[in-house]
Length: 263
Image (cartoon, rainbow, N blue to C red):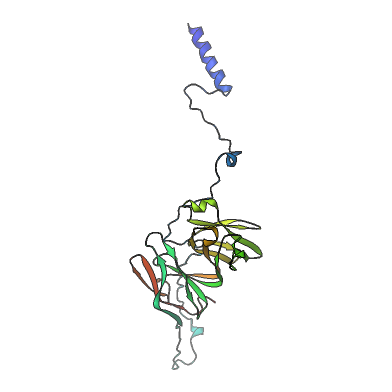
């Protein structure tokens, strides 16, 4: 009897060493993904994005206050009776919009609107209800799907850093996938949600909004090419955001910021 038990134990260990799966073990394995695109339908990448918040690649940094150093004896003015006046004033730029310009409309799906300061040549966009971006704008245009330029002189491609890109209107776009737009290029491809940016060596493609249409050439996207970008928040020294929010709409009345914030 003991001999049979010993033989059974030896057989179990032999099977385990041979890599066999025991009856009480759960079988695991890897999935062969080769040829998966041929089996399933291709779907462009979808990311969960809160449309009320823009995604930018710049982050505001809180200013670091340096401790004031008291001047040593050798730094004191020779004439003690002469008062030395130091002016440390910050010259502020004030930009007013009358009537107020619409920045963000969140009645239903959130949509961003471009506010342009013609006097200073900058575009202003809402990151959210309390943060804005101000950017030097190199180009601004409506971009139609590839192939639509032949009708009515519409723009269906643009160039950035020597590479050409065009707006791809996939079949999925007509199936309620209009949260994002695909851009194909002769060197690379990328996709953007509304309020997102793609950075190319100092220049940025910013997607304001996507406008679907009943036919191919009725659809378009609103795009800006930005150069320099500054994030503005009211905690920053010299920054005042004159915004008003009512019934899902965020409007800009005025904007104050230190001179030289953006060149």
